[in-house]
Amino acid sequence: MLRISVEEAAIDLKSLLERVARGEEVILLEQDKAVARLVPPLHKEERLASMKQFRDSLAIKGESLSATVINARTEERR
Image (cartoon, rainbow, N blue to C red; front, side):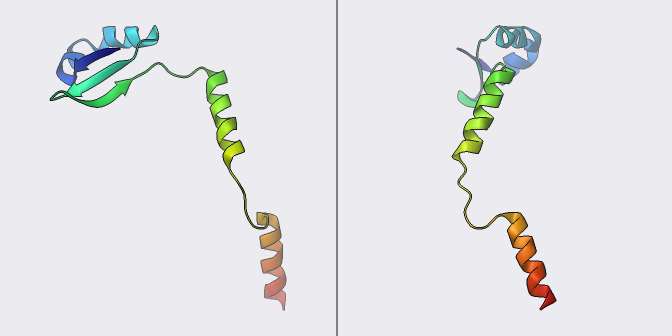
């Protein structure tokens, strides 16, 4: 993993992006503190897998939205 100052990165951004495209991670530093990280994009399969994992982790509580709307309309008519 390459660690480089923001100033140096600005001078040679194109070569940094080429390294990232090949799979390398680059950490950008300002005053020796990490301020950003350049990483290659996830492949479509990896994005979809993480989205599925996120959706599966959600626990829905209470009644469904359609039931809530139907109940609210019923209450308004009374």
